[in-house]
Length: 165
Length: 192
Image: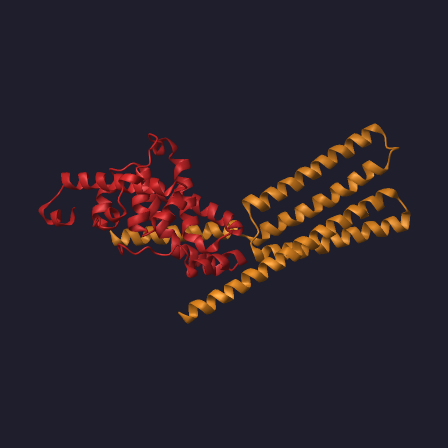
């Protein structure tokens, strides 16, 4: 009976470890972070063209509108996955914060450079939205680092308290 | 169970473990499995009264625990949080079996000292559990086998404290009846 209970327990632990491994896989998380950033960047560029080029033919405008919707859907999907299916633990949030900051910084810089070089309103518009994206990314990074430090401090405090027991 | 002692609902070891998981330390998840997997399995197996469904229910619970951990605001209440998720999984899965007649709180009829003085033993509870409805089974398993204070049980089951008391009271009456029906002379001295 005990042998049977032990093997049931070992098998359950094995299954839960596998489930944990699969659910917390960092690769899948960062893939979704990148998907979110790329979809947001593509959406911004297409929206900038759509809003700043009034001379576009109707069919092109319709196509750009559909592309904006597709990009928004990918953004929503990536957010849903990161919030519900594969939530980011604090260490992952810090890495995701750095990824977002670097990516959105590069995007904003490139769009601004294009605006300076060509003077195209679409590039300036994309650059402005890129700056907003960059500001949000910095805000998320600062918050993630602060939360991480707070948890780490509490962790160390508890380790000391439990060691003193 | 240490009758009369109300264990604290805040456990520094649990808080540390939850924080390590939130920080993303992988070995903390192994510890979480070591600490909770068998207890959760025991809980869902007894409440669902099904050996075959237990592993599936635990895995479902575990998935929700992993997904909810980053948002856990009070890591010190890890145990109550984990069991409250298991409770919701059981309710979702066994909705038809779980639904029973609306229960009135009989708080006024339940004497606290009566609960504390009840000397039901572990094996007696195990034998009587099958005769109880799932809500009573849950309260009994958490109180007697998981040694959870009643206030914590109320949080886990999301019911008022009075309802927990009334479920425990009802469960004990039913278990006593079941045990008395099958009583052997050896067990007579344990029943009150």
